[in-house]
Amino acid sequence: MGDVRRLIVFDLDGTLIDSRADLADAANALIVERGGTRLSEIEIGRMVGEGAAMLVTRAMTAAGLPLDDTSLPRFLELYDQRLLATTKPYPGMLEALQALAPIGVIAVLTNKPVAPATRLLDALGLAPFVTRTIGGDSPFPRKPEPGSLIHLIERFGVARQQTVMVGDSWVDYATARAAGTRICLARYGFGFATFPAGEIRGDEGLADNPRELASIIRELLDIS
Image 1 (spheres, rainbow, N blue to C red):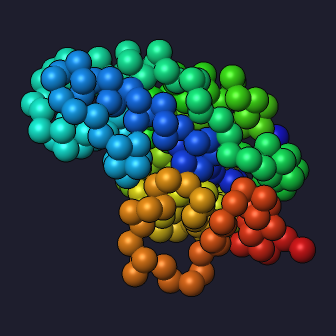
Image 2 (cartoon, one colour):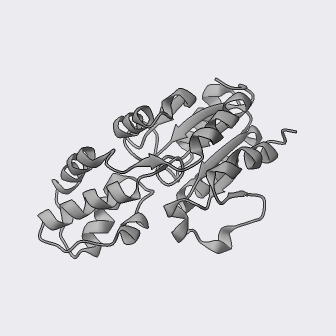
């Protein structure tokens, strides 16, 4: 655990890891099973960020297919089979975490269920850097509701202005704003494609690749 006076909270998909191809493949497998036509990987990537249920709803709707009670469970089965097919940490991410580990507690806050999130962190060598992981099936409302982020802040006893939320999507941005923390936008992530440009205020950190994260976060936290 790093310096307990600071907290660095990462989103998972599109921020720590590039999982777009495997998510798209699982969603398309469901669509094809139900008689539809595959969507593009880019199109499905734009649907990610608010949890598996929302992804399934968006994908099935885009494919012109009806939803039923089996749609989400079947998607989760299909995704579990593909979880690590192509998913990898973004280049430079391990080095970024190594640089950040001494300066603050690192946590993961994702709308993905905690079991696959934990499996990914373990398999991809990210788990040793992460002190706590909260998934979308936790007792807290999913992002962009701020309750899970506030829980992490209170759990580690860190000031909100000494907390940074790192994420690639508007969902992460809105979570940080609602919780009163600092925000670093991962513009390299696939979720940033749908970020509303008019929301940028100028006090955010903006990272175009993971190698920039350590210096940006140090600046946000006023670490010389």
